Length: 223
Image 1 (cartoon, one colour):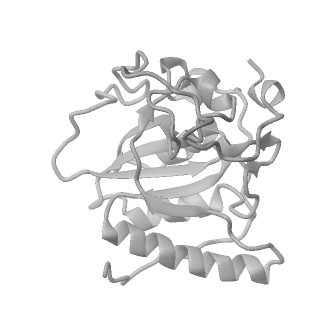
Image 2 (cartoon, helix red, strand yellow):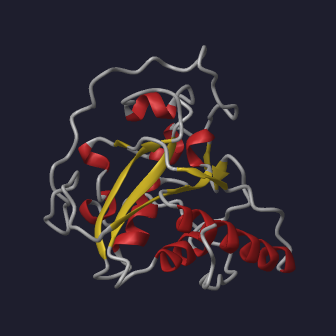
């Protein structure tokens, strides 16, 4: 499947509750084990780990960015979040009628890999100024998004967005379009999408950064 060619033409408006696909009550059949790590993909996860959910374009390449960060990453998984349709399929998300974003779930050990390090990888690995697209991938499911799971994450995300926005402006880029909202429900994508670029090393990856470096946010209060 040549993903970016098949689905290049996308709706660029978020659906309403009236126009969104209805979805289903039960989850689609999901994977059970991480292809690289051999750990339970859907948990339970070890005590002391934290959860991050991030959207930065095609989730195949985005997931690889995070599993490559080192031993502090316990699990990565791809899925759908931020929309209206419960338990969507990939085809439904690609229709533009679910409102969901392609996102990466990262379960990490903060003593080894901090949330600030995840944010640095996030900002530097895509162009957060492109709105509802990343490169050739166009549509609502390719928007840039940070879905925080704690007040500390929210504060760090906001601080890093402000600082990176200044650096991008200095480099001639437009304003950041990244949405920063409380984490919605995460729906695991189908098994063949999980760790896709480990299974297909030369598969499609549309990810591309701006070349502008991002500092790690530090000493940010959660209040």
